[in-house]
Length: 137
Image (cartoon, rainbow, N blue to C red; front, side, top):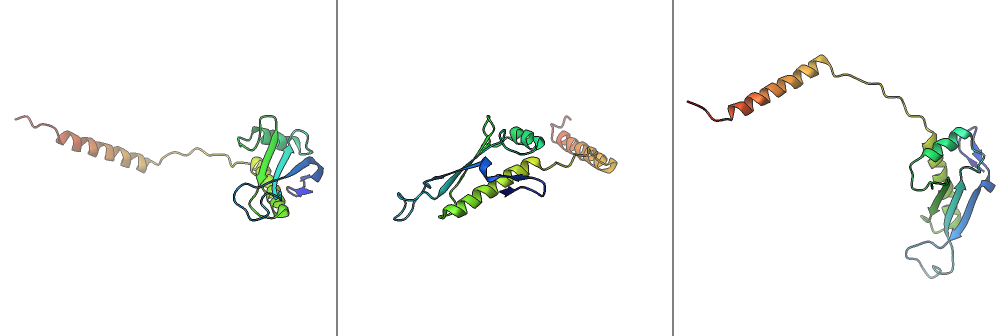
């Protein structure tokens, strides 16, 4: 069971694990063992609350497919169990990132002083450029 927060959990039977061979260089057992994990999680068929599902569907992440399948490949470690735990942690991170609420932006205005400073800089710069021109006698 994957615990997302105090009120939300995902049962193990909703998460599909597949052991695959890891990429990259290896030792003597490289062609015999499958220690990488391919995790797939179907958002629509899960027991997550509806607001979580809608936010996950709207997430613009390459690991979330258009038909609502989250696919994670974990091959950081040489152990199958450590890669499994890593994939679960990454799934939890995706779900938490999708459901965190952004603080609303309060529009701000520049102060009077900063506006005057900006306009003074502009006039000084334009005077400087005018003084660079040809002098007509």
